[in-house]
Length: 146
Ligand code: DQA
Image (cartoon, rainbow, N blue to C red; front, top):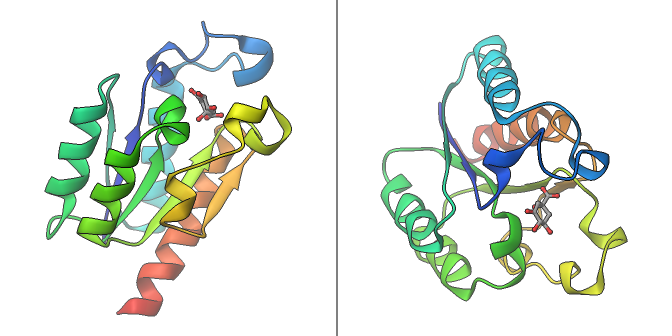
């Protein structure tokens, strides 16, 4: 089983960026925890981050046929990107949306998620642990499809 974890803009600033909201652990710590969890679960994982919407769209397109599922934190593009929604619909891979914070409890402009218009599977407000939780959900989802 191969899983792609895609992270959107500013997530590379973890640890520096608004630590009261996003925590003190940095992006390298997130990557290490995701990789360790994948190893424990016996799945292959690739983790990518981009600040560019088009890169994320291309990564979703290229995931078709290469990965069994996606874990996606589109960050700010969650709330704006019809292009990411269209790419998800176009490719049709099982996807779990993840957010470090609880977007439903934050500013109103964060309440709309275009990613949620594609997938009902959402983990929010669990910090980095949420990525591990999302991976468990995705592994179950992919298992049900096989
Ligand atoms: C985020 C929430 C988004 O609203 C925000 O723009 C981010 C991070 C989260 O992980 O909590 O960049 O996706």
